[in-house]
Image 1 (cartoon, helix red, strand yellow):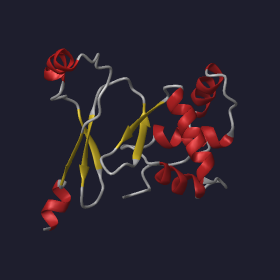
Image 2 (tube, one colour):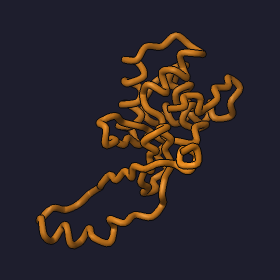
Image 3 (cartoon, one colour):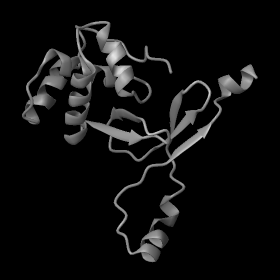
Amino acid sequence: MVINKCKICPDDNHIGENKDILKSLNLKSTKKRLLLMNCFRHSDSPLSAEDVYHILNKEIDINMSTVYRILNYLTDYKFLMKQTLSDGNSVFQLNDYTHQHLLTCKICGEMSYIDSCPIDLHLDDISEKTGYEITSHNLEFIGICSKCKDKK
């Protein structure tokens, strides 16, 4: 998986906005939290905890437990969304309050999104048959991206 998915820029215009968000969540504005938030603001795809660690570790001294702790805080406070993949690993992205599903290339690991949801049409039927009130769902499509397919 490509881990150079975002740029960390100390003069980034999101720092003030990130500080305001952390303050509204009653969280301290630490350098590590601010830089981690910027990782997601500048990423064009979801990031795993390992991706974030490798990106931040180039700029600051940080350990994996700190990355996980910050990711959990920001997920609990709804700044980030977490999706557990079919392989058991999780990826995170900015919470833009839209419903999307992942496409994952099984060769290179590239991830992208589809905006339509094929499950929405069936939720009422599933709920009726099971008695569950469906509150959310995850769906991941696994295949081969166009770049990897062209290489074959």
